[in-house]
Image (cartoon, rainbow, N blue to C red):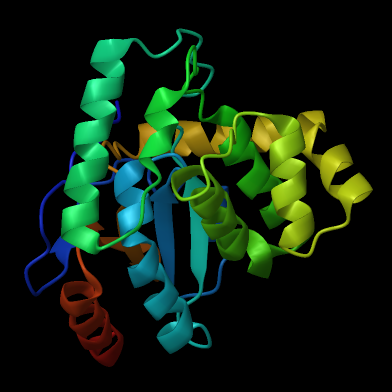
Length: 239
């Protein structure tokens, strides 16, 4: 259900989306104030890394009035096949496209790895762990995982790497590892994947603005801040 495309470029006004069952089943929205944003993403989604600077702007400009709830999309949860040459070539193309579009840094030494399994479940679960322990640190944790993977060539499919990233982001080592391995955290991560699928979110990043149970798409796929910033300000002004 997911892909690594850049998606559509948002062009000035929020687009209503058809979301059968979207709000009715979303524990993410039931726990959030109104209005708020739902951000469907995956730490190992290349276009989400490109979008991270826009997320920084959103947090900086709207944190007091428009909180963001991260929902993990799970582009490749529990993937078991090592990347072959074709997969590496396709992924490298995505990285190059995102680098051009967003200006984000990438460490292309990643492609020298042998037998890398692109399983995004652990990285997603690390963000959910952060969300459970300290909701305001969920976005910083996501960005830390992204930076570790894309710029430092660290293997964020491995628990020890994720725990190390969490420590650097301000979490207690023992507490983070315990919650990361907790069955409730695994279930909550699966719940995020289910929500993304049930909401028919097929491109990441996807940013949804929610007000009084009504959802509008801000962007489906990558868009730069210069496009979504004015749109969010317009939406906030007429809500």
